Image 1: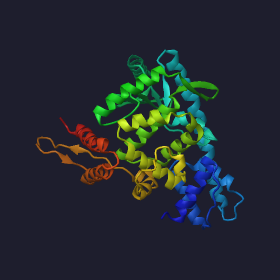
Image 2: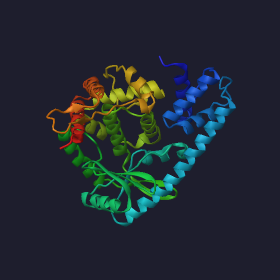
Image 3: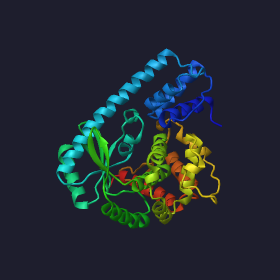
Image 4: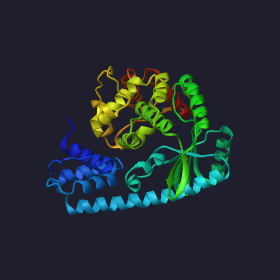
Length: 372
């Protein structure tokens, strides 16, 4: 059972994000301040502001004036950040497109225009997918010459900062640690993307290419699954999923989507994600296309509690070190190792083909910190 602070926070979020009719419960000024703190932790204050506006005629919505002023200030800051990011995004996309590299916008920035008030969706990293390997590598070379803070988290991903905007180049649509599954599906999706007619969204009056609705949904589902196994998902990921289903769900090929998810053995994971949508965002079972009459009930209580934690309190890093002249390797955070092991064990029943390889991938990646 969620406490009253969380219940009211989620009510305002659902009202602001989806326009749902919500009835708030009476709370003290202190509890309202805690509810707003939650919105700050989850980068949703501007969306909660929309919910407050929608529920403004309710007697029990007694938010102190000082809190209202703080909410308004945070909302204005979100709007300004979104404006700057959109300007930079369009400029960068035009440069990459002008070089004939075909950057395809993916991730939260590609879904944000679907929100009723896109300017209230706090911008995250700008992600591009390059469907052609040669053009993608050329984009990386260009970014190395013009960007800052260059990082290569893996062989298919590049991160950098361009004019203060965080950017990611993706050379793979999906991120799976199970190489056998990932490689086979990647070829299928890239062929799918090349053969389908291009889809676009408009940002600042400029048309930007995005994935098809079906591929967008699949990419989001695999990303949520990967994050859930690795470090936990964000509430904003579920908001993106909800917006996608409600705004363009009618344009998605669910037969094709099921074929892909079946190949990745994601059925139980999709049931878990569906349950989270029902528990947190009050979607109905009929709105969740991944549920079937034969679906077994899923208890998502622990995952719900984890999602509602401040992001700074979730996830732990495993790192290893080796003292000079020693033959022994030491884990600098043994509790983190246990946390990852327990997390992988918890999700085996939902995604067995990925949960085991995910843990060993994290383990192996951490060994890179060992001094040669």
